[in-house]
Image 1 (cartoon, one colour):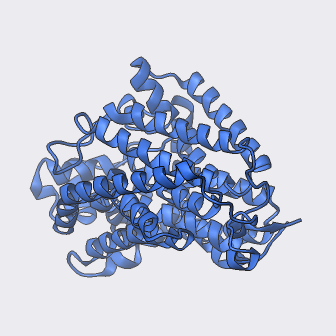
Image 2 (cartoon, rainbow, N blue to C red):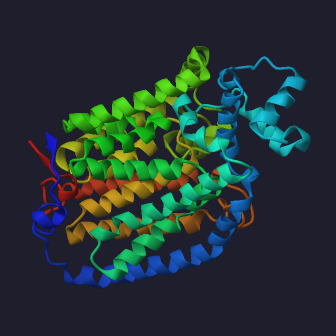
Length: 446
């Protein structure tokens, strides 16, 4: 298959390539009510959480940015090889000097920042290619690197909420989607932490949309951003190969490879070997209990449900998720991109709470694909479930600034929500009257 640059308007105004059907009477009454409810809930959430998110502009040490920037600073000092060492060969004095490089002034700070720096030793699991992205801004003076990172994450969040709006017709639905996505607590928390997961979600959305428009080079560059967390690149790349979008797949592999080679050159061959060994060990033994409990995937779901690790069951459920995903590739290629992103979060190992920001990308892709009014009702129902999960977990899962820190108790709610998403997509593929053609935002020609 080759991608085409056909727009929805050229196909006839329907994102599925089929004529737009009239909205049923009951749906015309229900949808506005749902959208108004989402808008009200989103505004309340933004009033609660947005001030603390904006205050994070001056709270670098409470973010994850020092880990990434510290890795770049260590590479600049020729110490990048220690990033993936199981036990870095440092005495206490050398450790303090190391920490002062990774986080200037950290060794004098005693507990907090110094502890974060010590945790960086032997626990930096991001691939060497990620250092390539952070290295340029590490040369900026003072707090500027953090402010650049924070601003990029904030703009990424706005883009995730704004870009899909052109696929929605009414102002009410546009407002509901924009505010609903922007106020998602996981998205807010990711911005507060200056977590690149926001940019990964934007890259996933942009990669699929650019591929659909016949721009393989730009799409490949966007997908290559996912190589910074490679477990989330596997299923999108597999979908590109399944749909024979070879040009985009080649660009993705090429740009990802170039980033990896550059990163490997920065940290050295020994560090690359340590990185591979570290992650193979992680796959074999699984994450520690705390990490599992913080994961919004099958592993986290089962740990919270049963109170202990269930590696075998998690793997089997992950395999079942992939079977459902492949069936959607075959039956519903229009919603396959959204399903691929959702399945990546649920089935792949090591998906922490902030990685659920990727669901904002899945929501945008679903909006671009679901043109039949009945299917848009599914999307509205999903948003209702999102907010039900948010409010149900607030007593046990408060955000920073709302009375506590993120706790793992909410994992079961979010994992159940992802199951509901998979079920909705599966049922939609059997709904009567649903278009079976490729959608115009991802039109493929055999």
